[in-house]
Length: 169
Image 1 (spheres, rainbow, N blue to C red):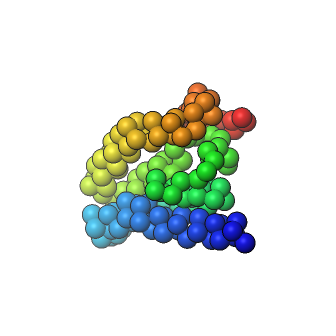
Image 2 (cartoon, one colour):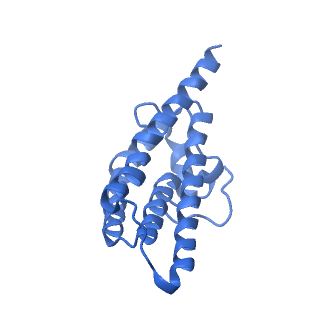
């Protein structure tokens, strides 16, 4: 019964954090910047819109999958309610920061869809903030929490450019 309650809390926390963090960063703020008004790309509309939607849909799919892995590991992506074990399954076998990359893909897909240089600038700001957070907080915290297990993972799985083959610990 305790495991079921823990699982329910993990899913609720994960879904809440999904709406609070990426929901605001990749949804609300882009809407505030663009009003989600589509750009007329003229003759190139079909190809530009197709590329934009691929980036958005792939970003959303990877984001949801990465978030679900945290709930399946009985925790959340939120620093205040982490998992008890290091998440190194699924997309995390290819890249250490799939959620951040997914959010950036969503923002850049919207920048293309809405023809917004403001969103391109915003994506650059988000990238700088995320890299700073990862370097100053996330990596030191994970090293302290998981020790050699995280260091081995870090040596084998790139942070920002996915591996071609999955890492197998």
